[in-house]
Length: 99
Image 1 (tube, one colour):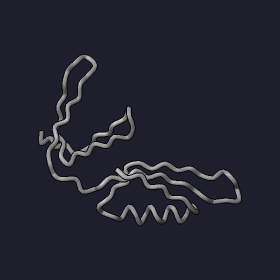
Image 2 (cartoon, one colour):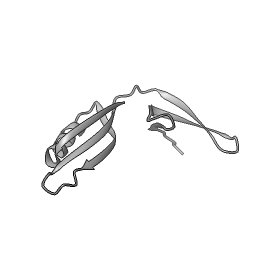
Image 3 (spheres, rainbow, N blue to C red):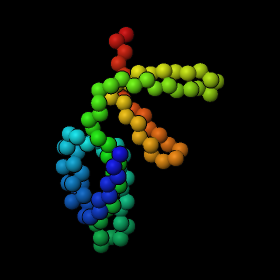
Image 4 (cartoon, rainbow, N blue to C red):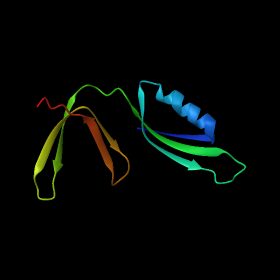
């Protein structure tokens, strides 16, 4: 995962993000805006968390343990694991059920 910080005039930052979203190899996973509250300045700060959008097409087994000890297993295609901080990890992917 890559963290990108963009600062500048609001319309220029939004234009940059639109152009960046057109890139196929990256995906914006999370964005956070900080707007300058001064009325005479139209600047924003944007933090982007970017992940590579081309994961290998492999199946990953993900196990979730419930509070009562039961284990739920899910097969995910194109799975990605992103460690946000010490306490937060995000797991996402595709799951297909033909029934």
